[in-house]
Image (cartoon, rainbow, N blue to C red; front, side):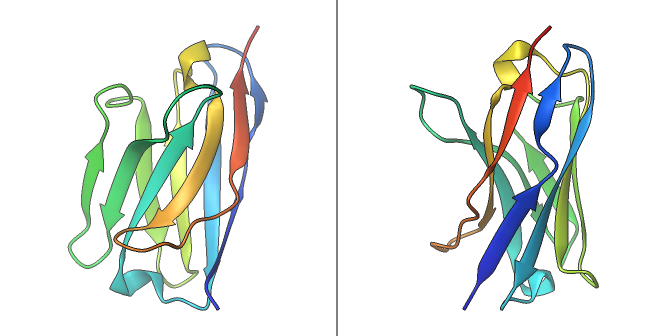
Length: 114
């Protein structure tokens, strides 16, 4: 059974940083593409960043380019999202997702507020 567990969310001031982690079990991360999505209240879930372990290709939503960095440690089966220069609009629940699958984590809440 595949399980994805996110952690690292919290309350941070505008301009601050957070690092999210996604730990996987029952799956070998290096064989897949992994993604971070986010969903704010009343809004659709949106793709934030993606990583393909096999070729180390990354992609980012325009709204986070230059501020967020996706990375991973396949030996630890862990995916990361380093978030910097955070804005109130970045407030959302962040989810880990295995590309082209129905495997999702339960999310971790990020709140950016003064």
